Image (cartoon, rainbow, N blue to C red; front, side, top):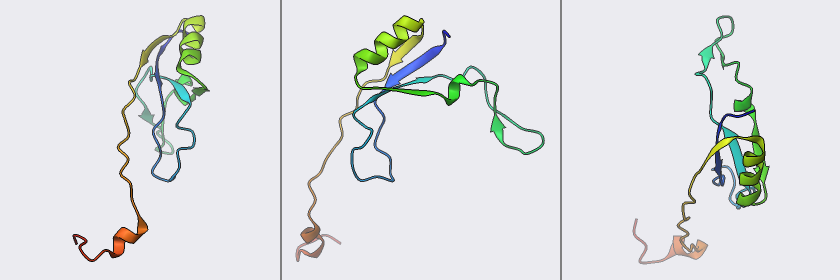
Length: 99
């Protein structure tokens, strides 16, 4: 198993308000072939089973060590700092609120 992979920290999904599963690191394989439509059902698919795998690690160092042990070429995606703005429910009812 020696494909191209990317190591990254997953972003928060739109469906959650918390930071669950964003502190761990993930290793995903890059697709080896383009997906194609199935002639019978029309679903998109390919013969590449590595594209279905996402490995999760507690630290970046663990993910790098795994990739090196298995001979996987990898690219590390840099972290993007999250912009957190403090919000208050009471701000919705302020008199000088911009509408």
